[in-house]
Length: 105
Image: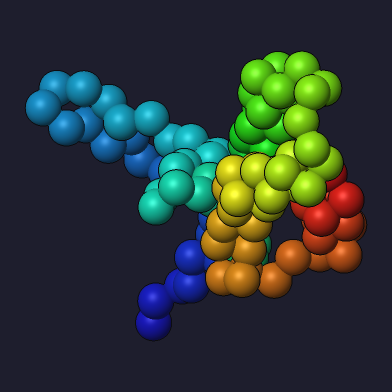
């Protein structure tokens, strides 16, 4: 009987060699634009989306330099800053603390 991956995510594996190069085992991998972390449950890394959110906000604020209508600024935030922050969040269950971190950023 096959052992589910969930219970074996943290076990040491045999080194895999491909074309003479050893493949590295990683804790975090990017797949379809999201970072999946090693865990007992399907878990996304939130540090990259939060960092991208702040980069987008800082980029918009640097270009505007305080001389723009607040409604236009809010529209730009909603169109360019929020989507990378909430991308793929509906695919996994977020803990309350993770949701608070994302949506109160």
